[in-house]
Length: 247
Image 1: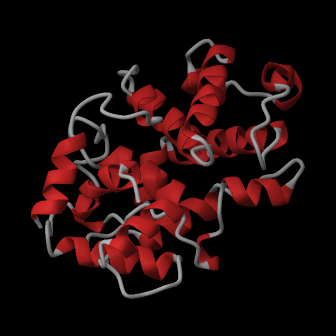
Image 2: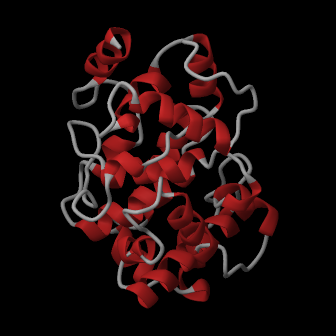
Image 3: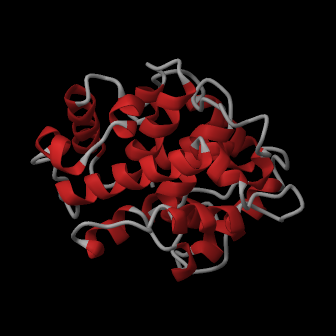
């Protein structure tokens, strides 16, 4: 336990490491934080310096008003605004698909929080049911490049770790010097699932926290359950430290 707590405390301060979460700290309006949080988390793969530049470019193009841009977005009128916004496996059409799906769901539910709460229950073991409904709702409208959008917004039922969606939820639900916790009154942080990518997988395997060898949703849940032995109320608090710690 000491090693995990030491890791958590090592990174438990603002700007302790390069991370997209710090973009959210520049906003006060929960609407902006929700929208930017989802977009930033979806693009949080690859080299951190590169996807941070992508997020910076997006904010410049939308005049640092992510919520207003999304809610007023029109394919024909605003396509030029995000033209050329390509990042690794995803092109500008994927970003437009994401923006349009965010807009459509906010118009229907009022906020991304309300969308998530549609299938969230404190009686559930974790947030998996709500995560699946959230993802499914974000995958209903496409213009082009379905394969690329699949990578940006994964189908939870396929069993991947869904690292970036769980990362978004960590930002929204937990509240400390790192995570903003704007959903902390509505969603129990003990229900969150660890955001697992290949780096967290390798670090947690090295620390012998999980016996399972496949890097999938079952692994993420098993890791979360293991971490609950160290902090039952807040197992995902260790994620930031694990994802920035060297293997």
